Amino acid sequence: MTGKVRTRIAPSPTGFLHLGTARTALYSWAYARHHGGEFVLRIEDTDVARSTQDSTDQILASMHWLGLDYDEGPIYQMQRLARYQEVIAQMLAAGTAYRCYCTPAELEEVREAQRARGEKTLYDGRWRPAAGKVLPPVPEGVPPVVRFCNPMSGDVTWDDLVKGEITINNREIDDLIILRPDGVPTYNFAVVVDDWDMAISHVFRGDEHINNTPWQINIFNALGAPLPRFGHVPVILGDDGQKLSKRRGAVSVTAYEENGYLPEAMLNYLARLGWSHGDEELFTREQMVSWFDGSHLSKSPAQWDAAKLAWVNAQYIKAKPDDALAPLVAVQLQKRGIVADERLPAICALFKDRCDTTVVLAHWAAAFYADVTPGEADRVQHVTEAIRPVVLALADKLSDATWDKPSIGAAIKEVLVAHGIKMPTLAMPVRVLTMGTAQTPSLDAVLALFTRETAVARLRAA
Ligand code: GLU
Image (tube, rainbow, N blue to C red; front, side, top):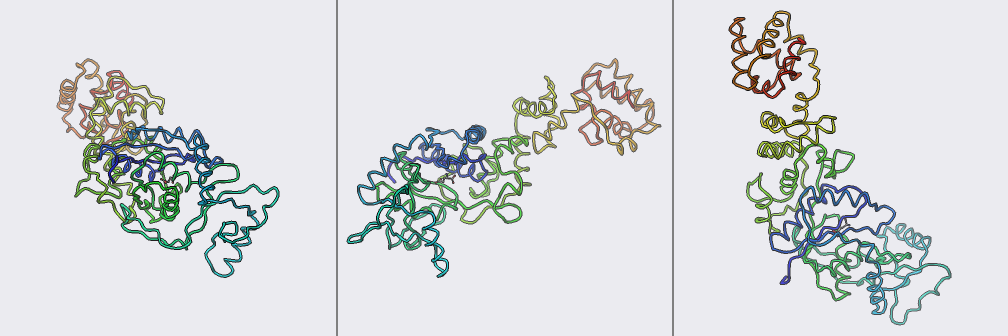
């Protein structure tokens, strides 16, 4: 390959951006960026019945969220119909495609007979022109499809970037339909015209497309178009060893955004799922771009590991500056009807070490802005009759303490000394009353993040 590296991602807008597509987009993007090339986004919307604008919007939003910027697009296939029809006309004229007038009933009859004989169901070529062959009379009122004259023998071989050499014999595949009666092309044809017109040099896609690739290579050849390199990335399997699917948990990028994952953590995790660079587990997008040269892609399916993703996300949350983390937590708080304030970065700083998503962090932060209801068991265990007067004494002390961590710490110590008790005996009930749980970071730090009014009021409610 001597020209410029150009890659693309070509999602069909029939749903959200699937994690598998996001990973393929990431590989395509990183490969282009690594080589100083270009990355194109194409929307394959020729399945008119299933494609929606809402889905396109979601896909674009997810690409944006992940930071996978593209140099061209979105290019919509449905806006390119005239171009496909032009190429079809050229192929009909050149004899590399032909019209087929078979009715669905006729085709089903052929398939049934093939099944009965235990054969693969392939189009029988009855409308394929050949020297000396008499074609059936063109029937009235049957709108034709256009089929591709696939070579009838020989092998199609390509050196797959991921899987190595793959060979499929032309006898395994038939003359596929490339244009439907309504003038809309099928996937295998439109994808070739597009990859050709858009000068795509490297195609990364899911390995469910391996069986389509021989047709596409044959069409490229029929058009005299240069072949891109293909890399078929294995599927992602769920915990149960089955293909990752909606039925088994969240598979959309949007769901992870909503559930408090950071885009940089998602990219890091998705990158590692099927690709490696030595033992590196945590890396920036810049590092990935500098390393991603198309090698070290795994040939075997990757296993989705929710626990590992949570771990990766936790590392990114821990490392993220509090001022950058706070707005993300604020979004999660808003969903709970809570408007945060300038304390939020400090709250993030204190709690982020114990959180693997911003949703969990928002859960902690919520205690500072909305009422908490301590668990009954915690209340019974820690907020005892004996400790109540001590808690009230602390409330009094805090009513006129200077409101900062050292002064609050000093107030707590004074109360402990005055009542002759140890820290945990007082800390536990105070945590339960203020935060709603007995497990929190150190008490003075936690209390300092409350407003004085809220802290004192919660203690007085003991
Ligand atoms: N629209 C196809 C898909 O979403 C694209 C496949 C390809 O990349 O060629 O699976």
